[in-house]
Image (tube, rainbow, N blue to C red; front, side, top):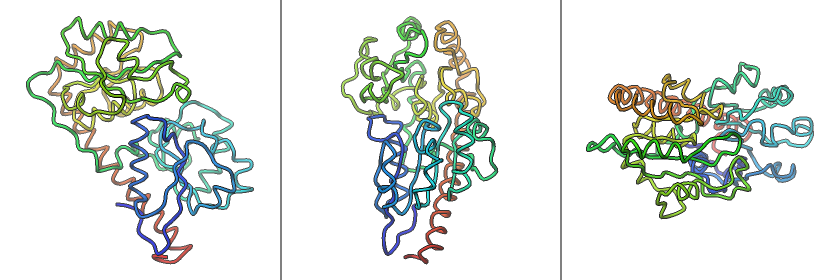
Amino acid sequence: MAVARRKTPLKVTSLGYFNHRNFGDDLLQATIAGLFMHHAVNFHAWTPSFRALNESDLIVVGGGSIWPDTSFFSREPTLFQHVRVPFAVIGISARRSDSLIAARTRRLVEESVFFHVRDNDTVQELGRPSNVRCGADLFWWSADFRAPAAPEETRRTVALNLRSWKKMTWAPEAMMDVLVQHGYKVLPMPLYFGSTVHDAAGDMDDAALMRELGLSVPVDLWDETPLAQSSIVVSMRFHGLLLGIRAGRPVIGFDYHPKIRSLFSDLGIPELLVPLDDPIAFQATLAYVEANYDELLGRISTYRDRCIQQGSSDRSAFVQCINDHFDRVRGPGQ
């Protein structure tokens, strides 16, 4: 389902973390492109000038963990003095707590044509306004992803995503050693291939880190082969976990970021979330997955189906909202 064709296509300005070679954000960008497949969309990784914004018919902000760091959320004192274009916020989550910006965001919520977040924690950070829709990550809005079937011959092949993370002391080598020492075949699954200028939390991209750990990464772009050939997904990156869930694999994540904690809370399997600096806990979690593999498959599949259903509902609500808005201001089909 996409926003309906019109005699004059809409000019849409989409603000998010785009064009930085992050495959997770590329998935979100693809979803937004699909929503407006009959219209003209300009994707920006920054907030353009007020004049540029006003040349659009619609501003779409999201998705990803961009609240409140994206400048759109901090410009409320001047935004409504200069911007006359309707806007929608979709698929965002909180990166950090900020009470001042939360207060300013309330007017954005009130003025938006649609305001959607991807987790309950962000609703709470915003002060739980009644007209915020809480639903699924934009990844779940898309029906285009085709999950590869899990291999049946072994349960000891892991698709591994680790990222550079300077905000705490931890040793990726120790996590890799746990997998090797316990006989797991490890397939590297990098998701970020961009400059560290755009990822200040790390000092190298995923592919470089994987190579430093002795793994072979033949190309610096997304490849679904590790996911297709693995039976377990171990990922630091949020969308690596979502890819694993959608593919029907048990997933192990690391407790280092609010969006990861929120995901495993929603998933209802907190035992699959391990401290980033605790290889012993990681070893125990791998053993737990191996001992409970079939049960975990069922729970993951149930959660996946719920997310797909929620994503479809969110997408339909958004498309209906945008269609209704422009039917009112332009006339049906105009």
